[in-house]
Amino acid sequence: MVSASSSENHDLLNKQVQEIAVDCHQLPERYIRKEDEEYGSLTNAGESSSTTTSPEVPVIDFSLLNSSPLELDKLKSAVGSFGCFQAINHGIEGSFLEKVREISRLFFRSSVEEKKKCLRADDDIEGYGNDMVLSNQQTLDWTDRLYLTVLPKHQQRLQFWPQIPCHFREVLDEYGSKIELINEVVLKALARSLNLEENCFLNQYGTKSSMNARFNYYPPCQWPDKVLGVKPHADGSAITVLLQDKEVEGLQFLKDDKWIGVPIVRDALTINVGDQMEIMSNGIFKSTVHRVLVNSKNERMTVAMFCMPQTEKDIGPVDELISDETPRLYKNVTFTADFFFKNYQQGRRAIDACKI
Ligand code: OGA
Ligand code: NI
Figure 1 (tube, rainbow, N blue to C red):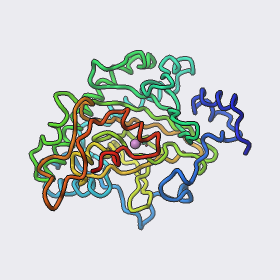
Figure 2 (figure 1 turned 135 degrees about the vertical axis):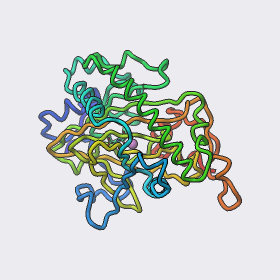
Figure 3 (figure 1 turned 120 degrees about the horizontal axis):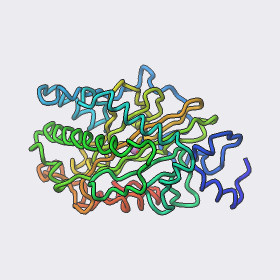
Figure 4 (figure 1 turned 45 degrees about the horizontal axis):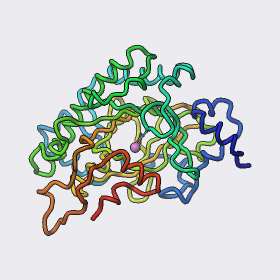
């Protein structure tokens, strides 16, 4: 495949993947995966995600977390080994989750002009656009995103919030409030699972939490083994709550050097811990690397909600988790988006920069 000239390259970077995917006869070079940039092997991309020998992503019943020590233990081991689980009976109605999927669908299906009203600037993460270009060599993800600050409310940049559909703002604000409650339930349960005071993680948040929403759109691609929807990464959040597509799978977590697919469980939320929870738990809970595969026939849409402490606050391992046998593994840090992306840009994990 001939590499694109610089003007072609420029055109390409200005196009969203959704536009490139329409009538795409040749895969643009910038999107082709490179082995040396990835964890694990490239050849397992098309592998079935749920073979009988693969472990399964644990399913946690939220309605049992307060009454069943067994369920709490299951949560602890899920987050300690996988770093992720599927939450069921979490209290958000399936019909409301459908509304969230609907605003995402209506936005991505609106006209190019309409979507471009929310376009992000080249050097900004907030807004609509394709993968953020951090370096000339970077392989681009086969995805378009709409990234918005949801909390704290006074930091919302409403110029990036879609006008179409007209109820977008109302639904996302309501979803944000519901996810804030889920964040509280998860952080309290994780603390209790370690026999700690239940607010010990939440206390690091300050009076208000931060939350960002990322609406992900993965167009189909005729060469699904040559691109990635999202390249391997770990999240910079404390926890991430993902609303998966109702029909199309694609998310995989790296466990013991193997990629494990996350199946679709009706009305479940897929929750994983990010770097900030790994730090606060002094490494007990794992911020696991994950990636997204694309599908040759079907588009896929997901909504990720990144929950984390206020960025002006320092976070660090909880005192009670530090002892002679379990020494402190991480420094206290102010975990900002800039800090996360600066490491990401250099091909490093932000969490490694926090290790002692
Ligand atoms: C993310 C992410 C997974 C998905 O947005 O950080 O990992 O399936 N998304 O969209
Ligand atoms: Ni992620």
